[in-house]
Each structure stands twice: as C-alpha cells, then as structure tokens.
Image (cartoon, rainbow, N blue to C red; front, side, top):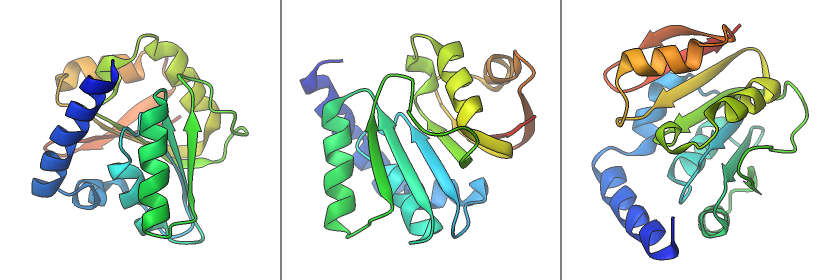
Amino acid sequence: MDICSFYLMCFWFSLRDAFTPPIKKLKGAGLKRGMSVLDYGCGPGSFSIAASLQVGETGTVYAVDQFPVAIEMTRRKAAKRKLKNVTPILTDCYTGLPDKIIDIVILHDVFHELINAQKVMDELYRVMKPDAILWFNDHHMDIPTVEHAIQANHRFKLERHDRSSLIFKKM
C-alpha cells in the first residue's frame, strides 16, 4: 500500500469511526482494567486508543502495524491524549513480545490483507495467555470462511459472535 492509499484509508476509517466508535464495537470483547491487549494491524490507532481507555493505566496496549506512518499516527494519538499505556510496534509479523502475555488480541479489518496469515496466527498464538481471547472483525470475509481460517490448526475455538464480530478462545 502506498502512502496516498494509506491516508485515503485513514480518512475512510475516521468516517467509519464517527458512525460506529471503536469503543462501542469493542464492548463485546471483554476488555477490563489491567489487561494486556495486542491490536494487530492497528492502522491509524482507533482501536488501540479505544482499548487503552478501557484497560486503563494498569493495562497495556501493543499497537502493531507494518507501516511506519501507522505507527507514527498511533504514537501521536496516544501522546495527544496523554496515554502512557500504548506501545507501538513496527513489524509485519514477529512482535518481539515475550510468550503468553496478551489477554486479548484485536484483529479488526486486517485478516483479509495478510500475506502469510498462518505465520501471523502462529505469532499471535505464541504471545497469547492460555484462555486468551481473539476478537475478530473483518467485513470482507463471511463467517464460515473466518471460522475455517482461524480454527484450521485447532488452536482457537469460536466462543461466540454477534452481528459483526467473532470471539475466539485460545485452546
């Protein structure tokens, strides 16, 4: 994705977020104070910031993206709000995080873009605590396709879904 496309995407996300705020979408994810969250494919940081507000100062949000401009936008948004619990990570897969530290992974509108989805899923599985949650939302894919892709290696099990998001539990 080139820089112009990224900024166009950010503009679209700002419109989307105005009508359906990320904090409202994440309501069903079960975020609680003190949790550690990984927002994989954070883009301009809308969901990272929303998660940060929900987990509070005792929680941590790792905002991961492969585009430097996304990381910088997220860093600026967190600084503007004086949020000290958001840690941006620039990578296309490996996070550099220790094993089993994440309570909830956010995969919002990114899975359909992944070049090596299995490699990413391996990394997410590695950093997730036992019984951690994978919150999934990607309107580019139908539910049966998502279920098959996420549950293919028997590492995650669909726990529940609502109109637009699916909740998988690490097994």
